[in-house]
Amino acid sequence: MKLSDRINAAQSRNQPAGAGTALLEPPRPAQPPAPLPKETAGRHLPERAAVVVPTYDDGAPQVPTAPKVDVFAAMKDRAATALFERMGTRFNDAAVTEQELRTTAKEELTRIIDAEQVPLSSEERTRLVRDVADDVLGYGPLQRLLDDPAVTEIMVNRMDQIYVERKGKLTLSDSRFSSEEHLRKVIERIVSKVGRRIDESSPLVDARLEDGSRVNAVIPPLAVGGSSLTIRKFSKTPLTVRNLIDFGTLTPEMAELLNACVKAKLNIIVSGGTGTGKTTLLNVLSSFLPHDERIVTIEDAVELQIQQEHVVRLESRPPNTEGKGEVTIRELLRNSLRMRPDRIVVGEVRGGESLDMLQAMNTGHDGSLSTVHSNSPRDAVARLETLVLMAGMELPLRAIREQIASAVNLIVQISRLRDGSRRITHVTEVQGMEGDIVTLQDAFVFDYSAGVDAQGRFLGKPVATGIRPRFIDRFEDLGIHVSPEVFASPLSPGAK
Image (cartoon, rainbow, N blue to C red; front, side, top):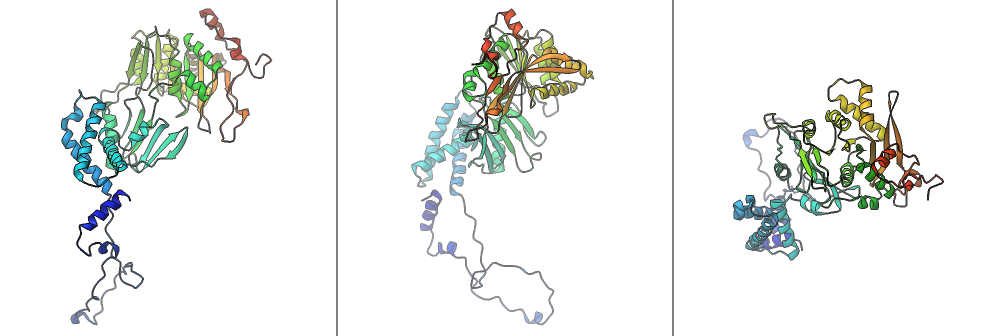
């Protein structure tokens, strides 16, 4: 028997005789309606609109019953209120760790539920304690999804519709918020922890969770159907190059080449669409950075998980309520040049800061890494051209292309395929200029000709084109060795 059924049964035992039958069959009128008074009899009355009243089979009118009350939700609200009253200022005590606070809160919740004297099974009691603890200390119905390692993305379209991504596929979750107000409280709890704000005057925000997961929130009036929340989770333990090889994202030969490119201080751009894994790949590339170099990272919201010790992390800042105090990526990038960086890692270029990044790459800050949104290496070059124009410098197009050709050495294209997997589809060298065109040469491309298996998963992998990049000569000058088998094409005679 469900909890609500047992509580309703317990309540019916305390009601007077006949009270329970009123819920089964609505009361019917005991007498027919009284006749019209004599003074109005025979007088012509104005016509009124007909009112349709639902009736039983015998013609008697139906009386609507009262809506059912969610007893479990009501108990959750009472328990949460009592917990706030008992815990008081301990919720804001910085000396108390998160684990100690959660343990104390669960002990108090157990006492509160015992005082309710409502019959609960062990499963229902555990669920009630967990739900209230998540609402008070965590992120409500999102907490279980955040704790699930199989979930990589959470998309809240409105308070009663939450989608999740598992293994690259979207599914509708059975988790729900109790109301729009509940959803708004969770959003405000997330953004307040990183010093951001969200209200009607600033109805959208980018933020992050404690583990670095990316958060985007939009509230009414911009979100017409209700507040929207998107969380892109990041693994608590950063993925390694071995993990990406096991996933099929890249091959051992490609990993050897990328390792050599980072150590040789080539400027690398990671290109891809939304949700393709650009930040994850940038993290893996940063793992190749030497531990004796000074690294400066610049991001809108801190997401990179740099494993080296000598790292300075910079984060942009939005304007305050008065529209002042904004610090942009471009300002941080300019300032980083005065910080004696050996490597500059920009989380993503999406505006005029791309011009400053290209100038830094061309003025002695070799080995810089960044990402850009585009669908192919050629599109990445065109996208960089457009972003440089956004800097407002009125540069001629040929000058911009010469900057790109001189600054960028390698473009790594990553894509999310139809089967949900994320694969590197191109490793492309930027060779220079021919006339007014930036020349590109693929070193690796994804083999789509292998087809798909019975489950629809792509069987292909990135393969070498057999063309030896020009920057290999630079490797030899620096004493960096790359085995000849890395560039052996499957179609070439020297391939295994």
